[in-house]
Length: 132
Image 1 (cartoon, rainbow, N blue to C red):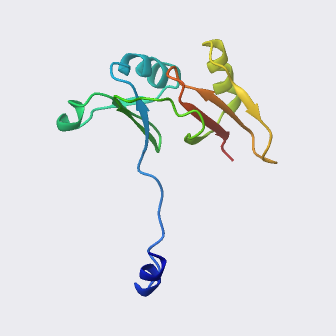
Image 2 (cartoon, rainbow, N blue to C red; image 1 turned 120 degrees about the vertical axis):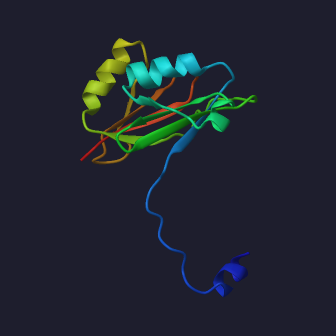
Image 3 (tube, one colour; image 1 turned 90 degrees about the vertical axis):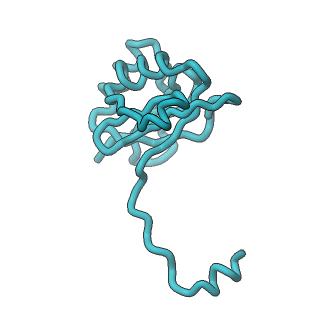
């Protein structure tokens, strides 16, 4: 495949950003996700197109960050893979999560980057990073 890519000529156009990130959830977990993503994180639930709403799940957004929670019958939580979300008041979010009983694990492995990890109620890993 590498030779075919080189033969194609010009470099591909640069990517401009994410439209959304999808996180898997098990069937019937929408209310648990709503309580976490909408009520606790303060995201807004979006109306899914009817043809997709029939599949279950939910879509949420906060500012430019959009997450699609898609139903997977063979669900396994993403314990390593995760979205990394920049947030303006990292400490306030950490306090809010801890007050709600969520574990917050601060990580100092990357110099000059304030961040922590947590998990949604289904065990999916999330990273939050201080916005600059």
